[in-house]
Length: 483
Image (tube, helix red, strand yellow):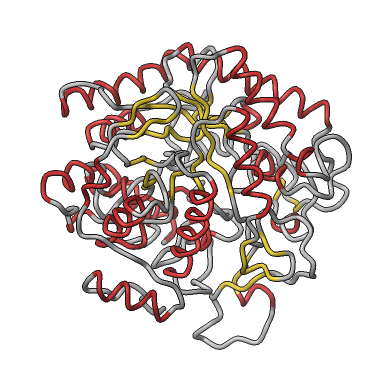
C-alpha cells in the first residue's frame, strides 16, 4: 500500500493540501493554544482537550481497572486542561463491549477514584487543579450494543453490516426497533447516570451523539414512525428531554455533547463486493451500493455522499445552545462502517479497508465542518477533531485554527495514547516529542478489534510507543493469529 504522509515541513503540508483542493493554514506560534477559555461555568486553562477514547480495559461489571487508572493518571499529568472522559454506558445492555465503563451504584466509587487519580496527577505536575475540568461521556451504544443490536431505525445500507451476535445473523427489515416506551426508559437511565456523575464529582457530562450510536442514529431517523422520528424536532426529542431533565435536577453539572455533523455512508473492501479487482486495489474501500436520494444519513448531501450538508447540524447546534449545552465537540462518521471518515489513518485497521481517499482530505473535511459550526456560533466553544494524522504538524494546524477562530479548542485522541504529555512538551519546548508522535498505523484500533480475550475484549493502547505495557499484549495477539 502507498504511504501518504511524506511531508518534511509545514510548507510541504500546506502545498499538499493546496494540490488536494483546500488551503490548510498553519502557525509555528503555539501561544493561542495556551489561552484560557470558559465552558459554561468551567474555567479551562488552555485549549487542549483529550478526546473520549474507550480503553476497553474496565472490569466486567463496568468499573475502571489498572490500565484505566494508569491512562487517566497519564492524561492528568500531561497538561491538557479538558479531560473528556471516555464513553461510559448508562446501562449494562447499552455497553459497546464487555469491558466498557458502566456507571451504576456498584461502580460509582471506583469511577470517583479514577477522577481523583487524574486530578492528583495534574496537581503533582502543575501545582494545582486550577483550570482543569474532568468529566465523563454518557452513552447508549444502540445499534452497536455488544449483547445484541438495539436499533432506533432501519438503515438499508447499515443493516446488512450489523451483526446480532446472539444469533450470528445480520439484521434485516424484520428486526424489531426500540419502541417509543423503550426510549422513554432510556431517557430515565441517562438522568440517573448523570445524577451519579454529579455525585462522584464530574465537572461535566457529555451526552454522546456521534458515530451512529443510539442518539446519533436518532438524528438520522427520518424513516422512523412516531414521536422520535421524521422531523428534526422529533429526531432530537430524546436528547432534548435528557438535557432538560439533567439541567433541572442537577443544575451544578455542566452539559456538553460530542456530535456527528456528517455520517457519510458505509464502505467495504472492493473484493467483498465481487467487483473486478487487481492486486493493487482489491483491499481499497468503496461505498456500498446505494440509491439517491439518501434517506437516513445525517449531515450528508442526499445526492452526493461525499459532500456535507450542514443545514440540520447547524440547526441542531443552535438548539443545543438554547437547551443549555455549554460546548460541542465535532465529530463525524462511523468507526465500524467508514473509519476513514472518523479518523484518517496511514494504515487501515485490521477489519477495515485501504484508504479510498487521501487522508488529508478527511482531515480537511473535519476542519471545514468545525469551522462552519464555529462561524455560526461565535464565542461559543466548538471543539475540533481530526488532528492525529497530521503527526509532526498537528499542533501547527491547531494553533492556526484556534488563532483564526475556526475552532475554540483542539481535541486530540490517538496521539494522546502515544504521547500523553504532548501539551507539557509543547509548552516547554515549542514542539512535540518526535519520538512519541502517533503515526496512525492503527495498532490501537487493531488491539481493540481483537476479541478473543477471556474477558471478551483486549484493552487498547499504543504498542509502538508504550511498549512496556502494550508490547506484550500485542505479541500475545500476534501469536494467536499465527497459530
